[in-house]
Amino acid sequence: MRLAPVPSVPEVRLYQAHPGSGLRRLLEPDDDSGGESLPEPQPPYWAYAWAGGAVLARYVLDRPSIVAGKRVLDLGAGSGLVGIAAAKAGARAVIASEIDRNGVVALRLNAQANGVAIEIRDEDVTAGPPPAVELVLAGDVFYAQDVGRRMMPFLDRCLAAGIDVLVGDPGRAWLPRPRLCLLGEYHVPDVGGNGGSDPRPSAVFTLVPTNAC
Image (spheres, helix red, strand yellow):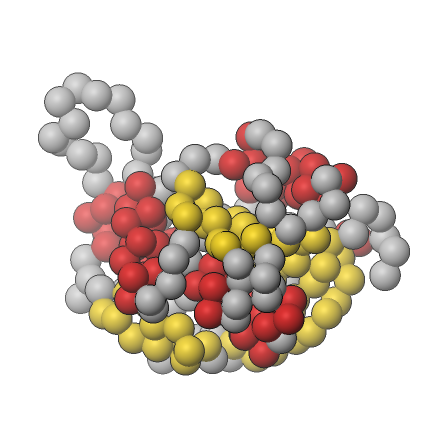
């Protein structure tokens, strides 16, 4: 992994994948588990700056008043790009939720590399009530149908608790468009961004209880 500025969000540096990273090995079963049942290895989503996270981070850094002085949840944090951006923009506290054990390690290293404090929760926060935050930042959480179906009840509980929800996404298939109001749009690279992905339109939305846009 190489520590480098994120394309379109140069204020943030992340440990990012490159052709020699050998991340495929992380998908192989752990033979040293000693018979202990471990979760199935997950694709290393945390090794890349996804477009939804990049556009949300860019939006927050350009408009720091959105997070200034607030407790913020970076939902499905992955690399921690969005949470790091929120911390740099003046959030009072940032919670980053990530269930991938390798992602948790990467998230911690990325936070340290950027000199910000982030509380990491290595559990599925969508299974319970919302944490004590005022804003949820959800970058690229609708990349698959089953993931989106798991996210929406939790996000609805957040709205019911008076918590604002911002979504960053490049227009993936499972985006709940009738529930979203457009706030802004940028052109950012999608997954990886290591010169192999041209910038594409990606947007930031606010989630609403009904189609009130």
